[in-house]
Length: 300
Ligand SMILES: C[S@@+](CC[C@H](N)C(=O)[O-])C[C@H]1O[C@@H](n2cnc3c(N)ncnc32)[C@H](O)[C@@H]1O
Ligand code: SF4
Ligand code: SF4
Image 1 (cartoon, helix red, strand yellow):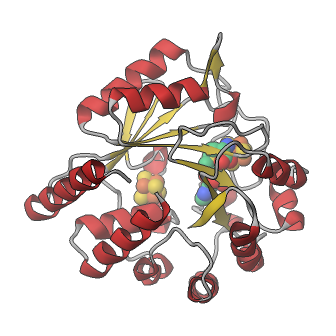
Image 2: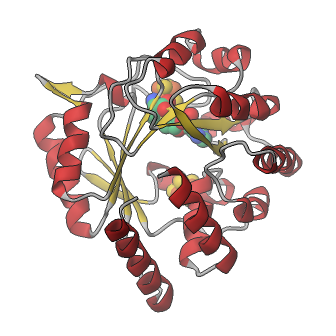
Image 3: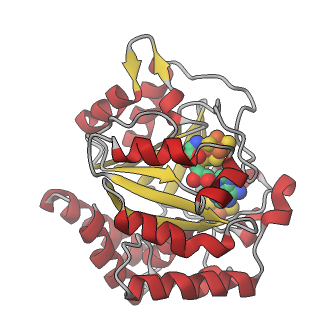
């Protein structure tokens, strides 16, 4: 991370903590909800299957920038499916950087070739070992691993949503992150139980078991892009929600924190690690502040 970006984020953090500000810093643009997969745990794919045009995406990026957002995510649906004529996801990433976003990331299912060296991080969903990943996502594990190895930069961070199907394969994903070319780290989430996927949710005890495994892996040097100090809050769902420093824009509509804010009661069962990490950070949790400094400077 550039020193100027670091200082900008530090200033934002200090002002947010001291004055209890609710201004956003992290924003997500949903490029499309169209997807080539139909994962068992996902409730947001192919609802409209509209690929939003470039002019709209550009406007949405500008809206987020004007609101103060400086960490931009592109998400979907499947982001690598997005294009408008000759304009591709890669052009959007380059344009976002030129607009002044300090960190630009994208989230992908990894089933398409990966040529996105300008992104700070490509969060690539890998949901277990081959067997469990394929049970959740269909038969695509081998293609994804091949795409990772052939990627044109080493900016990939695995992204695993832990649920009832893959809860015993956290270690496998840590090893894949440690041992595979082009992968910088792995970041975890617990399943967030939308009404149609409640059966995949983990109990408190199961979450605690997973956190024990992740902590052990961290101790043994696995590259985990999460904050250990947030684990107890994630296990007990005792972190504040929603995250006021995060916004999502989809088809012109802005939501605080996530699109899931509309699902009644869901925030009480939120499994997204970034929500715990950011809300605790901006409440001024000292352990989280120091751990975040260490972790972010290591991986971005
Ligand atoms: C909705 S997908 C969109 C990007 C891309 N298609 C992908 O799969 O990475 C973004 C991330 O959300 C995760 N996800 C989907 N439903 C979830 C849920 N109910 N709880 C936690 N994570 C979830 C996916 O596993 C994926 O890592
Ligand atoms: S690939 Fe992503 S958007 Fe598509 S179904 Fe799976 S989790 Fe949902
Ligand atoms: S806190 Fe609520 S709105 Fe935010 S990600 Fe979790 S469930 Fe979604």
